[in-house]
Image (cartoon, rainbow, N blue to C red):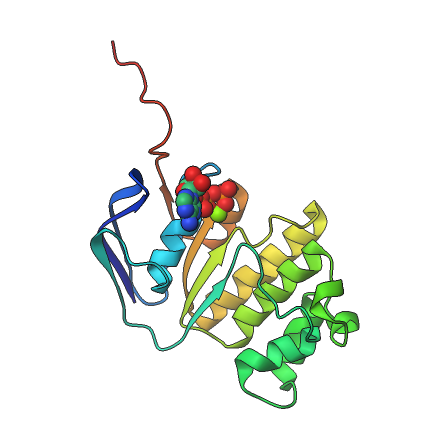
Length: 201
Ligand SMILES: Nc1ncnc2c1ncn2[C@@H]1O[C@H](COP(=O)(O)OP(=O)(O)OP(=O)(O)O)[C@@H](O)[C@H]1O
Ligand SMILES: [Mg+2]
């Protein structure tokens, strides 16, 4: 489904990722944990094919990839519903997507322009947009970071149930171990290459 081999990425002359290997078979769910700035979003951009690594390679064999970005990237002047229809390639919202929007508390917001949504509402919209296409490979970048704890817990369970049921392969990046444990069966730690080396003397 997804294979990263010896992936290395530099920004300027600084290595952000180096020698990274990851294999994600169909239906498997992996989470990558790491602190802010260690390269989690960079890793997802490589996995999605949006960024070509300086070393190594990323191979995908998925049928349909969906990516819920850290910044949800909705089209600001379109309504939330129009944003969903854009990725679905439909003119009316199919019943399963209406149900998904309802479960994520978005039904009252469907006619509202995306630019008027709050940060947490946008984040939920980005997640619903990604789930609505029923991907076989789902990339999630800190998908619950803007949500209050009760909402996060409810939607975490909703998302986990859905991707388990549909057998979606998942690559999640997060700094939150609860998110990682709830959504993934395999957890990897990403080293922060910019952190000062520990003193071994
Ligand atoms: N386009 C870019 N040009 C230069 N440096 C960049 C660029 N994108 C990211 N970086 C740097 O690379 C490092 C990793 O960035 P990245 O966004 O992958 O981190 P992250 O782990 O996702 O962080 P966070 O948890 O805060 O989202 C950071 O130090 C960041 O400043
Ligand atoms: Mg990030």
